[in-house]
Image (cartoon, rainbow, N blue to C red; front, top):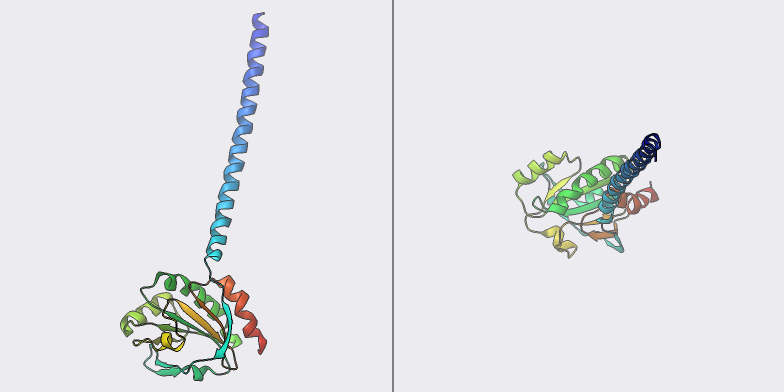
Length: 196
């Protein structure tokens, strides 16, 4: 084999290697982008997967009156004609903290539609609860429940737990655990729209 043929053969092999290497590099970058996007979608869907599914129920709202962080006494009867989501929670409870931004966002979006959240803190003092409410920028009523009256009223001491009262005073949904904004939209919004 002549030297010139040898050089051409080496050049072809080099070009082929570079082409294969470039192709593998493009394939690798594409795979990396796919995995990153897939991971991001997976993280979003796993956040939604963590959300509990509300259970449909039907019973009269409990007769509950407690002091709020402004020092006034309020009762569920004060909110007659509104759709009310009562959320029992605690400042030290991780899933309670995790769902609070979703509850706030949902409340702020639907407050003009005759909806409110009432956050009932299970046992902490005014200073701790007030600091928590301020740090989260809560715009809905926050009640203090040092004796656990709200938990006894629905016979559920697990936190967080929530229930939704319709405009007629009937508890329609109940759940225990962290809920997502998407799940609130799916299950609570139809109740808000019923009589609005």
